[in-house]
Image (tube, rainbow, N blue to C red; front, side, top):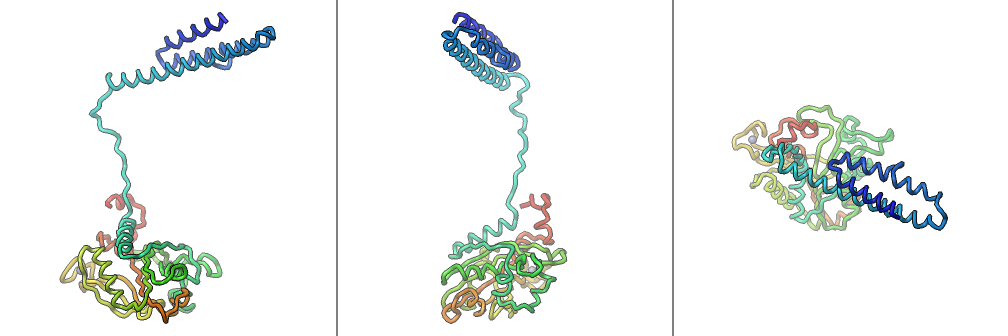
Length: 339
Ligand SMILES: [Zn+2]
């Protein structure tokens, strides 16, 4: 027992004398290492009288614990000393600038999408999501796009399987059909998301771009409701009222279908954005075709609705004066850091 006490007090003295992490590690190795003092004590136990072994084992373990504690305490104290020295001593200049943190920002498409989601949510719309790889049924068939329609031409669509059952969705309109299947009318919903076309890319064409589909189903929905919603939308985007006009347009999933134009928000007499016409083509829209309602499980004799397909990418370009659609998904930080 005397031996153990002596070993312990020596160890404590060495720990206390250690002024650096390295010398402390040396004490650690000397006492607690594989061939250290404590290991030696434990190894010697089998040579003792059986009656003494229990007490010797206990004693050796107590030494081990005590040395370990002393080392840990000393280690913490040394770290504290080092920190205080650094804070008060030489070589520490609190006026040096810190390391610059690079800050990210939201993509302009994300920003505009979120703004529009807020706007539509405030008008009672739900925000829906749908798959980007879509069944032919939802992308075409249920939207009243017959198999001989030009939109089905392989020029425009990325097919995912040889039979053409799976496509990269060419518009966000399939979410309309999914919404009709899942929601009980009356309802209002928007579906923002990526769409894909097999396009040769240039300043105004990109194979991947963003749309926001809108759908309202209710009793006696008319073109007046559609225009009202579109004017609210424009006020939300451009911050003021803009005149709109409807031109007839053909889209298989609406009847009647329209192209909605808005007064150019950038000029009064014509500019490059509106191609000197003072109108900008903004979105296709119309009253939902009865066939589409039927395909979505909704009785067209009881319910009607309107739908619109907002070109989000185009809107973002208009809003920020971006002249090339390829900037949007090009991943160039010099472009993105401006937002
Ligand atoms: Zn203009």
